[in-house]
Image 1 (cartoon, rainbow, N blue to C red):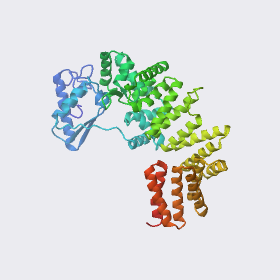
Image 2: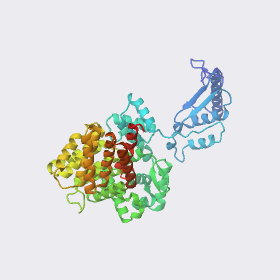
Image 3: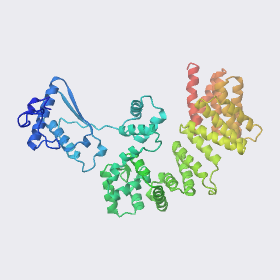
Length: 529
């Protein structure tokens, strides 16, 4: 400092010895801190003057990073500067991580004091968005990251820039999907500093789900109310837990901390905790919201390693998700049901066979945008059908494979449809037969338009009407309407498309409604209307 401000090296600050370091700085104590409050004030005054003089020549920005780790002297200097700086073009920019501020953190009083200063502006930074995380990863990796990697790290980091970097390093080192030892240790530092009861509550919340209701936590923990509240107060004060927005329970402030706490459990400990949750919810269902109950039970019994109890819960959860059009969640539960089905040699009566589960899962995968996953599931079903032939089931799966292959760019899907048509030829009339004909007509409309494709569409309409397959009939009508316009019957084709759209709006089957609505403007544009 004396090199910049020579006057700081006055007689009080120098040394009696005229050696090589004489007169270069305040005489510090052994820790490098000025000897007295007066010396501190003098030092702070010199720093203030230095900054004012530097900022007189040009604008100056002074950045203090990670203020939550600052020692007392740094905090005092920062407060002094904010109170006393008057001249110069100077911006003091300090950052701190709010999640690290427990109730008794020494930075809290300073922040409260600074909020009262008119010259101070506090800016709360939101977590990074998906595009921000992609750019950060590109900077870390030195190349544009794969979309799947961005999605995974964004979901797990929840937009926390520090966690993005740590996860990127962890995944690059091969720690997928878990956490590296370094990251786990960083995440568990505050957990290990808590009282034992608070640590126990954190382990319970980690296994309870994304959020745990207070009455459920009380029932599972078996702790006295006062002891439970003290433990929760310690965990929330350490910024590890926070109340849910509804105010009826608790959740981890960051899912990675929850992941670290969960991974720190012993295998037997995790099973026991989840079994306790499952038994508690089954005994007292009112402790969990009705719309969440099946999914929560499925997760608890699965983690408790009780496949016979987890399987029916997973099937109920999948059905509930399907009814809410939550297809990604449905696919998750069906994937788990397929895994559990192999572990339960004698499931309860009425449990779907694997082919039925694969059919539902493939549909859920397509509806949720997971086309690759759906394609894999269909392939798995077709391999099973090679061992136990069933023409109708095989034809059904082949129509799905045709559609998915086209969506994924793995061919035009024609070979699958022709094989499906061969399989159903000569069989009694069925919904599957009608669906194969409708898909084939739609394929010809795109790939081989002409008189023959119009004949195929008319045959599909007639067959679907005969077997009463209303949804399939709507799809075939769309195909026939488009082909009629292309063949020159503009008014007739448009009338069919408009009528089909109105029927689809009334019935609202998602796929065929989308076809009816999307094809009409395309046809109108094609004829210049």
